[in-house]
Length: 128
Figure 1 (cartoon, rainbow, N blue to C red):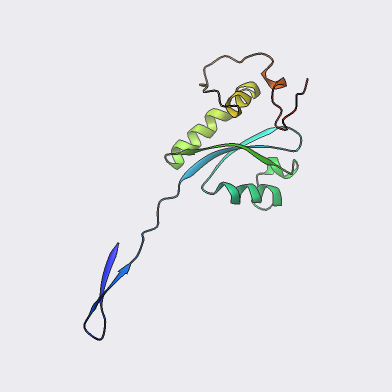
Figure 2: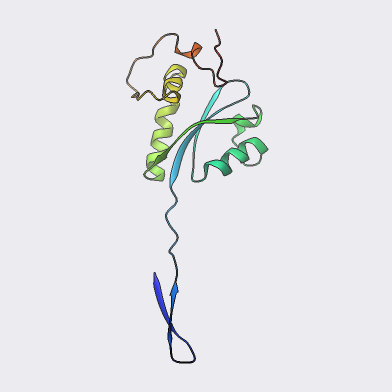
């Protein structure tokens, strides 16, 4: 937005002001200290991760499972879209979530693949 102001000497000055940009929403997944996965939405992923690890304003689920590590996030078009994606991911099985982490494009109706959880446990090592 451009605002014109008139100075005392009669010259016009331009004042540039920027409207607040709409917040971009993100869906994120963290791996907790016990290896479990937590999914949430936020407008500021680094701030939210810090809140989870500090225990302040973090989710009740992650407070007892600190520290948490960010393992995945994506940007959504709106808050509604982010919450819908979060709900869909929360319905995924662990195997589907792990496939999402390694970059496989999966839909919520796709069947699980047996044994995938041994391939990735959130710490980069295999678990059986």
